[in-house]
Image (cartoon, rainbow, N blue to C red; front, side, top):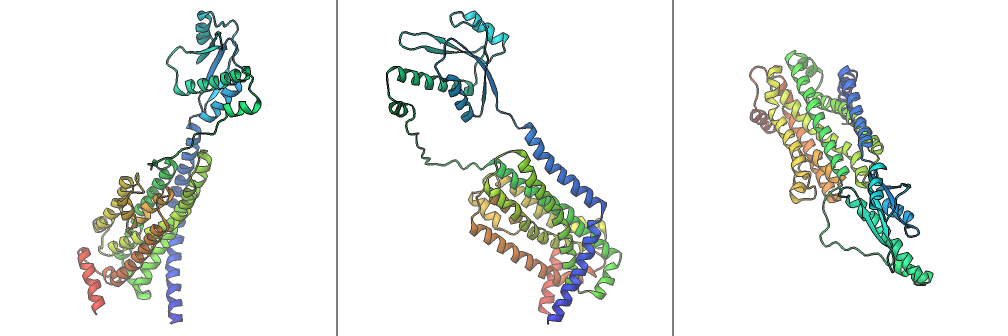
Length: 413
């Protein structure tokens, strides 16, 4: 038994090695992988370049501002993620509106804080040429009120502790009864990109499995191979060999994605760093499942012209899973998304997105993984049961129903 198992594994390894060597050395694979990595890295760099810098507002003060006004404004601006540049304008006079208006135009200012003396304390007026932005108003207003309060408290003779109690009261606590379920855009984008990459790999390398099987069948090579190999050894070796090739490309893209996230300069949720490496596992399971179906479809026909028609049901299922990512992915925590993401044809594309957004619990992940492994095992068994017969079939294209009938007849036999 051990020798038979060792012989089977050795034979499968030989078939796998042949596929891996043949595919990895092809120029198309190298060019495609290189372009994919460059595209992912370029997206990260482009995001870093075009990412909006904090707006900078230029302002001047006409009159005597309260002590500490500029420092207070810098502190407020840091909290609002904006910047303020104080401009010293010669000749600007709070009592002369014309000098204030000229300063706005000649010095290209966004605002002038005009300070009008009062009987008890000065009054600040924000002067702008056009309707100001909310950030500009909020920052200047908060800095003005803070420093004015400090000046008034000091004039009233409050002690240091009293000033601290007045100016730094306990912050307002927050309690959200209905938390916002919006997911981090970086997490969603990561999940969508992972699904796109898997779908592209299924389409490209799954097509390679399909055409490779048809080519071996149409040229008669399969008859020579089956004279030395068992059908399931040829099937598993071919599927897993091309899976290794596809995995190399996918892993390179994932690694490039990690670098791109770092280059982008954006804040990345912790769940994304878990979802990215785990997407490799989902990729393997999903690709083996679909490529096994493509291999089976290829064994139904004897001509390349009939290959796409035979694989149409497989392509339709993969495309439905791809569409499900975009129709359900925007609400990864919904009941519908959770149920669909557990199904083996959909799990490899949807589960990485749910994991990246933190919507998938450990039970969901474990259940989806178990169902996917069971589906892969069952599909390999089913395909192995009919592969030898369908590969030697000549003439008209077999239908999926006929292939299943062959499988049942073999089981009964």
